[in-house]
Image (cartoon, rainbow, N blue to C red):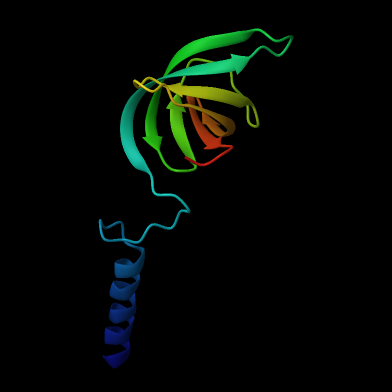
Length: 112
C-alpha cells in the first residue's frame, strides 16, 4: 500500500514538473510571443546580386528568431533579410534553421 502511494506521489510530481501548464518555466533561451505580423522577405539571388522580394507572415517571434510563413524554396542555412512592416521598417538578417513545408524557423544573426 505504501509503495503504491509512493508511486502515485512520484507520478503527480512528474506531471506537475513536466506538465503543459501556464506557470511552467520556459526552457528556451528566448521567450516566444505569438504574433501575426506582415513582413517582407529579401533573398539574394544565388546567381548574382539581384534580390527577390516576397511578402510573408510572422507567426511567432522571440529575441533570437521567429517562425515565418513564406512561399519560397528556402533551405537550411540560407540567409535572408526580414523587414517588419512597421513605421520604422526594422530590418534583420537571419539564417533558416528549420523548415516544414512553407513554415521556416529563422535565427537572427544579431538578437533583437
